[in-house]
Image 1 (cartoon, helix red, strand yellow):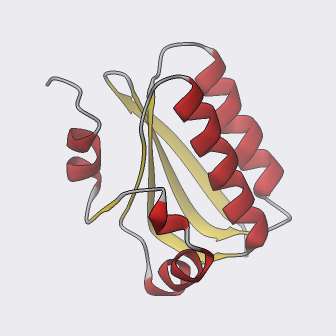
Image 2 (cartoon, rainbow, N blue to C red):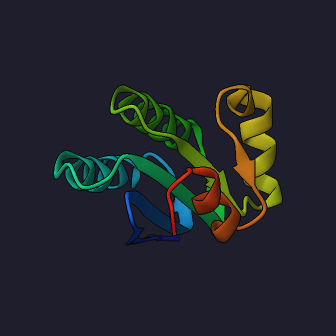
Length: 117
């Protein structure tokens, strides 16, 4: 299966929607795409919407952790939302939820970034 990556924005929040499988075949593309947007300097916060992400391996965890470090260095927040059960289980086992907040949907995740509407 492939991976679809869609990016959008809402004020200073970069919204990334992933669909399909985030594995070692696609991790570099996701990392590079998000980095390119963050380097523009327009965004402080990052929301990853995983509503349509069906599978993720340790490469995907690495991409997420790396973007978390980058966003933290920018003084922003990174938030996950709409996580599917198989991906949720991997994240839970990895301890990712100890550092990254999760929200039920994209609207709540964007709101949690603290940007004014």
